[in-house]
Amino acid sequence: MTAVLVDTRILLWALYEPDRLAESTRDLLADPDQEVWFSAASIWEIAIKFGLSRPDFTANPYEVRAEALRLGFRELEINGLHAAQVIALPRLHTDPFDRLLVAQTTATGLTLLTADSQVAAYPGPVQFVAVAHR
Image (cartoon, rainbow, N blue to C red):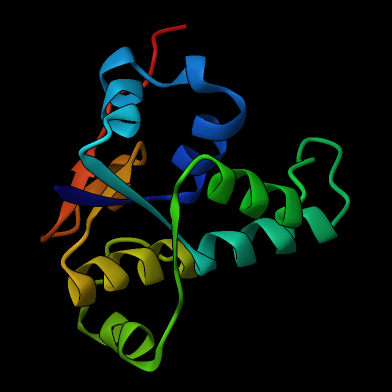
């Protein structure tokens, strides 16, 4: 069994807009031999954006977490090692949530799935995944 950590965008698309993901990515996430994780950092990011009451962001963090767990995704908590690991990352990207996700993969051995080319530029267990052509 292999294990991946989805970034916030992939998490939201997998739950609510799967057609935005390429078929190969949807197949990867649906594979019963694939362990799919989401981070508490993603729920935190969603909570902040939801709390701003932006009309373009309506994902409720409680609902996202519940739906991810219902679909069999596993939740990765944030611990001190994950937070400290951020210091070892090169300054390729300034988003603190994305940097924490990369640090979590470094600390846990999970592979981060992202559709963000800046995040995918990090060395280590980060994989750029295909999105659907629109």
